[in-house]
Every structure is written in structure tokens, then in C-alpha cells.
Length: 560
RNA sequence: UGGCCUAUGGUGUAACGGUAGCACAACAGAUUUUGGUUCUGUUGGUUGAGGUUCGAAUCCUUGUAGGCCAACCA
Image 1 (cartoon, rainbow, N blue to C red):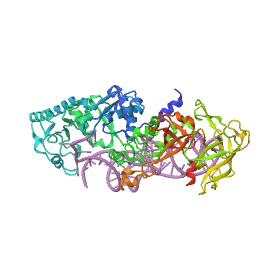
Image 2: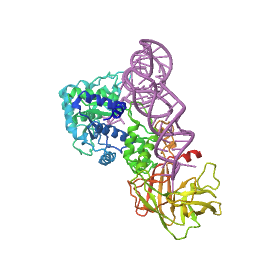
Image 3: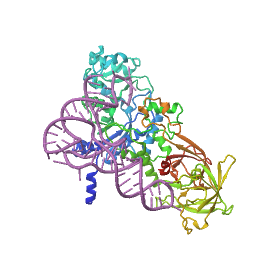
Image 4: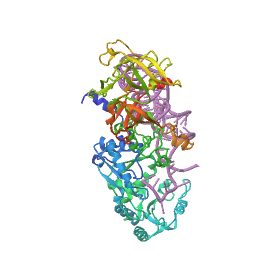
């Protein structure tokens, strides 16, 4: 290792969780073992927030030679489904991580039942017959202590008997719960005799009808961590008050001492991630589904053309801390462009076609021109583009009365056709309404790309496709779903904040013929327009492309 | 009004008592057969008030602001 490397390593800064992990390793805690877990509840699709959590938990394991389990926190049968389990596993793998184990909290139900019984035997849990309202009323408020209910003083034997009969299904749903007996006066509301088990006669996606009592989060999560000998159990800030209970359970049960650490969830501007709001977007038809490319779900980002590497890099760059945040969407877009710039194959596509006729080019002739697949990749290779007398160019690349800084085509000016010839605009053809329908141009035969000796220096290069050879396609242009940075914290109605232009469908795009074979999962840059990927709606002979993200566009900015 | 968490450029994040740095964004320039990429530069910051110290973003006190907690959700 050189001095430079040492210096670099020294200056690299760690986030607070990496510091904790490194300190634990240095102290030989758990024999230096690092074992994390990603614990989604299978009640919906994973979104960007989960993506950063995946990167955090799996990333820590990878970085420190540890392990990371994927554990489904499936303790509430009424909201959870196998469909979600499958999509979550798929999303985790797509993100680029392979779980050490794929586990389910529901597999621990027998053990968890035993833990609860242990607490009862220690006099630390009791069966409460009160209604939800009664329990809430006796819990007090943050400023007033709670008061004991009539069941709090039940004997261990009675509690054991009642709890067993709860399990046997002798009591009606909602009629009794098991509660920890801790401290009704605790300033931490979570410690005021928290509920541990409730009765639910519901079919569970894995355990079927084996159980009619299900553990609450606090009776399942930490215990599952402990069973799996998780060393660092990382969760979001809203669980901070639960840590006291997490530790209490582990202490009283005398089980493996997993430790909980909390970080601030990362929020992304111009979107929402609350399950309720995402559901509303889907149900009210504001988007086409959970994987509509405008959604912040992992499946939607994948469909839109974001790469897992870009999302991982984004998570790395925004870092990790404990303060509230709203990460600017532009950083995610930067990461997506950065990755795609390296790997996307360049292609020519015209979204808003304007006909160009090269008057001095032989009608019916086709010439195949070589062009780079990716100028950023020396091994990217080349392909052939057909050139002919009639072409399509972008409407935007022509202006009859251009402003001063416009240096594309206008009457009398020249432009280079990318990888082809320099043309000059001689004549503008209009329809009865005065709309420009065609440009009649001449080309300079000695200006062919790669062998140009014309001496001409046009101010710009524009993209084009040969009219005869182009294939038609639908192209979907996406923009941010909301018009405000932080829709979740806006007092206005959800509805008012939606961006009416979040989707623009281009029905009549013209693509270079090589794009006919493109498949979802492949990445392209339509030159000068942005990054695009085939959508899953594509059908043979009817390709559909999604715009992942535009290119940075200095001209667009200069115009406004 | 009880407890807990958090405050560093527009945004995100470093600096662990010793020169406030990095990235994105913004702006300017160079290069460019993508108004892309790449390269260079510029603007801009420690929540207020006290205190400790030779020296404070950092430690202490006290304000202020934001967030979380009284689900048979996780």
C-alpha cells in the first residue's frame, strides 16, 4: 500500500453507524461478527425509502464481511400477502443483494409464544380483558400517568391459563390482550404496559389457521433479531421510543443482546412514500399502477430505466444521519445519468418529426453510415445507419425566425447531421395555415462524417432518422409527479399538487431501425434527448419506450 | 404544558477542542460531430444568547425551531 492510499483511507469519513460497527469490531463484540437484517412487512411494494434501507443494511454487511438477512415482519395477517413477499424478494435481488437467509417472523410464532409465557411466569405480563378504549383511557397522556386496570393484579397461574385459552381460540377477537407489566407512569408512553399479543381469527399467508393470536411488533421484532443473533438492528427514528422496550424484553427474557440503532428516513423531493398516499394514487387512477414509471417504488424505477447501480450510488452519496431531510431529486437524476452515460447505447430517435428533403441527393438511394454505439465506451463498437433523400429531424431543431443564441437550422443556415453530412436549409415549405411542413435542403457530398474535407464549420450537430427506414414507436415522457417539493407536508389537497404534465405520450416517434430489437432491461440514450428504455407494454412491431431522464440541457435553461 | 430525537451553504453530508471540507444544484469559462460528456473556476454555511478554553460547529447553560411518542399497525 502506498502512502497515498493510507492518507486516503485516513481521510475517508464514516457515517455514525459505520463508526458504531467499527468500534464494536475493534472491541471484539460478538467476536467481531456483523449481522444485519432488512425487515419489510409484506403488505405493499418496496419504495425508494426501502431502497436506501436495503443499501444500508446489506451495504454494512458487505463492507464488514458480515451477513444480512431478509426477514419478513409478517405478524399482522390481515394486511400481508404472498404476492408482496415475492415482489420484495425480487426487488432486493434486483438491487444487487443476495440475502444470507430469507426468513419470516411467523416462523418464530411458537418460540415467541414461549417467550410471552416466560414473561407471564416472571410476573411481567398479564391478560387484560379491557376494551381498546378502556386501555387507552387508562394509559394516561404524556403529561399524566396512567392508572392500573382491574386485570393488572391477576395471578401468574390465572394469566398463564387465560393466555393459553386465548391461543386455543376460546375468546372472541378483540376481547382480550396480553400486556407487559412495566410502568404505567413511565414518561415513555411505549412503556405503559404495552400490548404484546392480540386475538385475530385471520388467515395468515404462511401459518394459515394455526394461530388465532398474533404478536405485536414489540413482542416480535427484537425477539426475532435476537433469535437470528442480529448484531446491529437498524431502523428509522420513529422507533427510538421503542428501544427502551426492545432492551427490556431482551433483558427480561435473557436472550441474545441484539442492539437497535436508529437513523432518519431519507425523503425524496417531489414525491411521497407513505403507503396510504401511494395507494391513493393507484386507486384514484392518478397513475396506472404500482409500477407506473412515475411512482417512487423500486418496481416503477426499474421499469422507468433507473439502474440498481445508480440507486446504490445515490444512497451512498446522500449518506446517513439522524436529522430530518428532504433529498433533492436532482441528485438521484445525476446518479442515474452518471451510470447511464457509461452504459447506454446511443441511438437516433425523433420525437416530433419534421420532414427534410435533400434536393441534391439521389431519390431512392440508401447509404449506410457507420456510427459509434457509445463514444464513452472504447469497446462499444459501431453500427450502420441508413441515410436517404427524405429524413426526419426534430421540429425543435428548426426555427424560421431564430433568437440570437439559437444555432440550429433556420433558413440559410447549416447544421451537421450526426454521423452523416452537413446540410443547408434552402427553402421552407408551409401548409395553408402557415405551419412549417417540410424543409428543402442541400447536402455537401464532401462533408461526410469521418472524411469531411468541406472545410465547413456548422455551429451544431443534430439528430435525424431516414424516413423510409425509420420505425414508428410510442414514447412516454415522464416528469415529477408533484409540482411541489414536499407534497407530504403541504396543507393543500393532494389533488391540487399533482403535476398535470407528469406523463406525455408521444404517439408518432420515429426511431432508427436498430431499435426494433430492443427489449426491456436494455438502456439507450436517444442522442440529444435523454435516456430511454423499452417499456414492458412493448409488443412486436409496436415498441413503447420510457424516458428515464432527460439529458442536462443548457439550451432549454437559456431559453427561459 | 411530560419524555425522547435533531439543528452546518439552496439540498444532502463531513470536520470527534486546532485552517469549516465534499457532492448535487446554481453561475462563468475551456473542450466537444450530442447545447450531452469531460475539465477549470465562482458564489454561498455553523439556530439565538451566555459561559468554559490560548483556541468552540464541536464541551456546558439557556432560549428558539423542527420531528417523534397516548394504533389490538409496523
